[in-house]
Length: 498
Image (cartoon, rainbow, N blue to C red; front, side, top):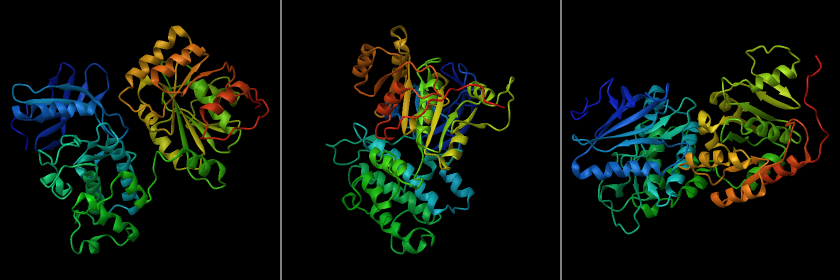
């Protein structure tokens, strides 16, 4: 039943821009709607209508302020905020996440999820919780339940509804407001103490137990072990029990400790270990994703991506490059030359090869998911310019994100604008490349970014060909991820024999 204070209906316009289409979610103190953007054709947003009393107006503002400081692929971006009106209704405009809640997904599968999938969800949840807990100040989500988790079409986890998330205050003894969902919230959220990172770990334990018992239990009580599915790994059960201890000091102290106990993959594990297992070992151990995105159109994104993939192909049998744009034509022109065609034929087969590199033209994110399940050592993503925004999520989740900008002084502003526009996202592992940039330009950007990961790319006319200076520069850029490659014979890209 709709809250009587709700003023939104289909056709209602917020801020002269957001056209309400339908309700897509509802809670005790809020509704969430799907809205069309009247300024950006085809763009849709999620609009959260929040109800509050005058005493709570500051809480609504706090949620908006909190979300604007966050930048993680598993969290929604907040793009607009409207303060409480006369009725006390405030509005948050956020990313619309295509998918279903874990609650609905769980129900649609008769409450029976494979144990491997449950542990994959744990891995993804730990990823975003680690980001929140390392935020300054630390952020505690406090309501990790199935209805607050979205699953995309690729079954990627996204956290939604930050209505009760809060900054951890070291000097505070206990929470002033007792919030959280019964059965999933830690005991200290109801008056026995202040919630902290360990409260979220309790919530994670409750969620995993709920999924492992087919929705029967979410608290550790007598006899609960007998409710856990027989195919759930028995060695993980003590981990659930420790996560669900009543007193925070009896639980795991941090996400990293839970990772060790569950033995799930750490997405930010030591680069040297990743390099050793993937590059030096004889057995395929995983795929590295390198995402190349331009600060603006024409900055040299595709040229740089092709240079990188052929540099890597000289030492690895399995490398691929993906054109993440269904409407792009560059890879199609390359295929035309490779196959010696006068006119390009838009074939259904989107894969072709050049000098040991598999090219995938006009691809989508779904295609990338499929490739990650293969045996490639490296996948390079050509994402085009950041203004297109379709590949931004892939850029943020890549092992090595590379932002390419103009090297000329008069176009340096493009790089600075791009960096400023993306400042809400964590940039600590980003690499910045500027073709033909002067040493002064490199130094200036390094100082601005507080990072040494800024490089000037030398003139490299043919990205398919061996180029000593470019190879040396790529060796520096990818240091720690790939070994220094041996010199190879030169290859001239041109029309292939028919």
